[in-house]
Image 1 (cartoon, rainbow, N blue to C red):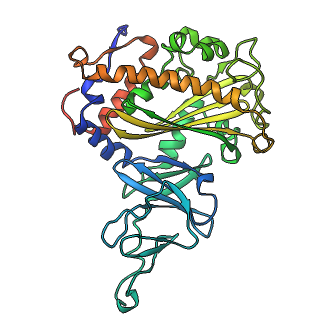
Image 2: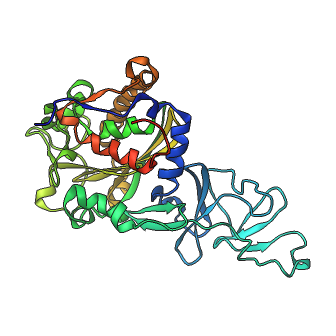
Image 3: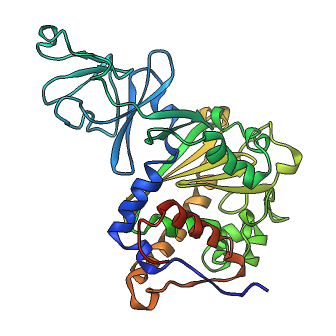
Length: 373
């Protein structure tokens, strides 16, 4: 017989800089990381810089149309190559320090007096490449020397949640258009945010708008608790909006079984996928410190909906409120992680027991690099 209460991670897992550094090295720098929307680097020369683990990563698009990713460091003396978060270059990325310049494929193409150094291998001295995949309309990167299986780790998380890949393919995330993006600066550990997203024990307490739209959440069990299950809209709810009013034109490739349903997927270590009939919501987390996480949230709609200038506010406001309610709760928990009352951790009730598998996964990824349970 399973005990009603199961232990959580100890409080130091959410506060200790040494544990956070180990997570950066063993998790975020070794796994596939969803870094940017493909449309952020739509044309050759477009770029975006993102923080992945302890590195700044430069994401761009080559002249062949393929995404590229490099460590954002000049190979000459180590200056940060692109200081801006985003932008576009005509032909090359040029270091402000000594004017070394690199093509969008990372090759060193110019530098003062370079012609007088014929022994310099321009490919070898080019930017340090990072593994890249594009899927669901996003650019995913991996800093590891040998990247783990994308199919197993990323696509596999969707199969584990939905039962198959066809279920997520029907939402055509790669062809949806960015309707709104909101960036949240959350003063809480990244694991608190993941744990919050995985359970709905808190839903009836802090999410009145969400529970109105998805009344089954009032029971405390999140949709992620059941493989293939999508939470059903309430009988008086027309759409996934802040007041339950009708939303936008539905994605026309979903099945009747997916209509009027909400599906949530966690792709470790830092992605939440939310699917509803007329749009998708993608959360990407960028852990910055043990007590600080940037969360970038994209609302994606059919291209014709975005191009029409339709009012997206009711749809965006629902999950924006949910985000702010969740992040406030996480920030409320963060100080308690360093309390002596939480030194040995807290507990999980039955509707949260599946979070224990996440805790086991964290311990396993750290592989004994930190002490204690």
